[in-house]
Length: 305
Length: 284
Image (cartoon, rainbow over all chains, first blue to last red; front, side, top):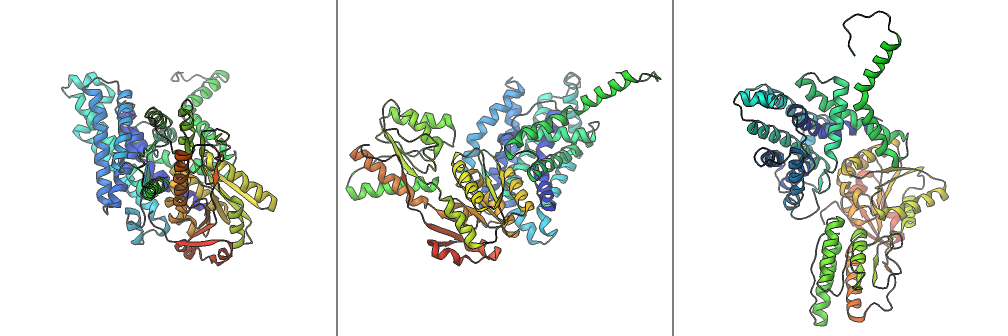
């Protein structure tokens, strides 16, 4: 049982930067950025190919740069060429398929064998024993989260946040929204690329279809986290991404382990759990409303429905 | 799949050199994408090729459809279950099958450890190749009265989660058929399985090179060679007299010695069961 918790924590931290990236693009910037799937594989591909060449650290950094560039393409399409934001992401995502194959040397998957990865290097330090993968993924993810929070407090960071809140006001304050959107999407996709880069080195392999559906899972994680923690502040949002990602992987592992449903029913259970998590604020509201309706005894005057 | 393609082209070159003829061929990768494969095969048929050699089920099915009007010979490679893939009884289609000898692998499992109480079955639902061997494995284990636990996965991260669920359940051994989805993630799970003392029996030696414990089966280079021979035969003598499909004479047992050491397992029991090949975790 402890082992599946460990695996869930590993996967939870490794993939947590995807919901964090979506927090920045979807919640802060209010843009549905569908670059994610392809960008994730791009990060993994760059990282694995660089690691195979003997540069695991450089691989992580290059993966982030590659992710940021992918984000800038999506941003350019929507800010300068007038492509609707959802389409811009899909277009970049489609194009990335070829780019990813190119990075992987026109092969559908690349493996790492007996190659030093950031995980094997960290393992050889002996810190945390068999939990070294959890610890390293947690360190990188939390560090990225802290940097994101620090960035969002800077002048540019505040402009990015303002762009998502009220574009007209941003324009009126003579900030160029095209610039803030580009910065925001570049950072978001750098984080997605970083997540892919870690996953690639963790799994010792990258597969061209490895990112399929990641955007949906990432969104589900974010919403699960927000349901648990609430979504008032920026800090809560960032923490929610990590917590949500871990909860999602735990739910998945428990369903696998307990087999409360046949294995073939797993996707449906995942969908139901996610749907319930997303719907819970509305359900809570409804229950509160019913309670009030039925037990209307002493109105406080302050409550509104 | 690359292994098969390389073997096919190598054998075609060899035949050409031996017979003093020129064999022109081009290799395309469809990336397991139906639309891409259809485009490639339609183009090949339009170009008037003498034969199409698709590798794996989807490519073979699409090629068969593309070649329907022209009756261009289709000589597929590595279809585990040509009947389930509906590739039998078509007069312009033949090929090689890498049908897995599931029963034999199960026997290896019990030869190695007669006290197995629970077997894990790890595979993906999207691989048609896995259907028959998994059904065979269940039938075998049911007949023997051994418990089993199934886990399926369709992406790398799901394979990691599924493997860890099997470890947590305490299975004594894990079986995976010739399943490309699990194969893609073998490098991500083999260390955990070895640390947990669970031998992973698989459907292909490529798994074993990536850290799985043992397999018995088809050598894909041999299979590619045989497919190329068949293709040459079809191009020179036509489709008459060809069987629906050809099975490989298997019987090569491959063991990963590094994994065996880590598991502390003695694989000498396999020696009497077939040709034993030992490998270490390596690229290839």
